[in-house]
Image (cartoon, rainbow, N blue to C red; front, side, top):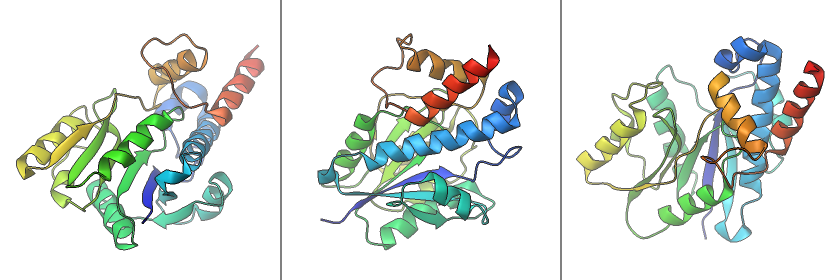
Length: 234
């Protein structure tokens, strides 16, 4: 059976360039270190998926030059895929097209900002894509974007004229799919950690206080670093 590809959209977590909105709250160095933890945890979740799902992990990154740092963050089983373009739509479409051309039977692209992304969501995405017929699998995020998009064919129209970074991204993507007559499967809602508010979502979840987000991944690296930040703050 051909392997599915799961690509983590990312860049090297450098201070001043990583998680800039979060940096306004916790500082540039801490934001960069936390970003590295997020990537490590998402990758660990992917690597731990059951063997029968036959998945191959990728770090889909830009710009060039961050390979050494990303290689330290991602597991040895992961491959790196440089995907550079000024248009984010081209980055997404290009990554899907490239990974399908490499022989994968389906591709899921996930953001690198959801360290507790539940493994069950990833497994569901792979299983849904492997059913007969064409479809898009979408994981809607609380900010109106999506944390995952899964495809078994490279449909460029899904990414055209999308106002990236707005609260309309998931809705417009689903509208594109409807225009194309493409079946859609929506996963449960989850969240990206981008700012002070979503950082509190994360802290609440890890501390067992969240009623909105439960059954997430263990996020061992993120949990450890947030714990060290709390100790240093005392």
